[in-house]
Length: 132
Image (cartoon, rainbow, N blue to C red; front, side, top):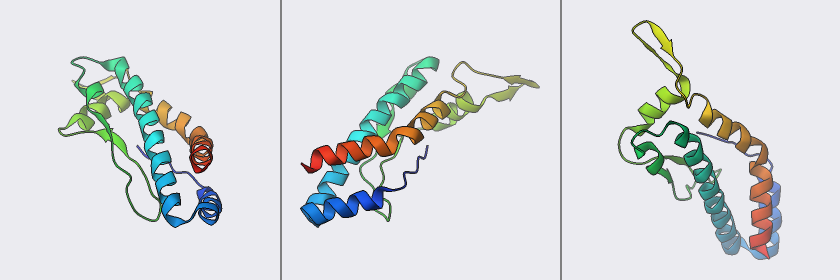
């Protein structure tokens, strides 16, 4: 799952001018971790619609802050091959020549669509709050 947020460079420059590089890094990392945990809850709620054993729901994890030109946090599944089952539940599959549309079809895409619209505002407000 991938969500791209644009316009963060200006916010980061303003915070960096006010607080310094080290404190800015801490603020950004904390804001990303907070947002990753919120996104994890949304993903868990989405996959709960097709709980069978509960393993898919229980193995949703949030990565640490990943370095790179855009810092990022990834939400996904832990060890094992749950992503294969999630893929089938998300997009459907063909079985014995018939297309099967599972209960949870499209639930994760709904989370991505919801997140794309609100990610910048949530991160901005969280960074402003932490920068005080």
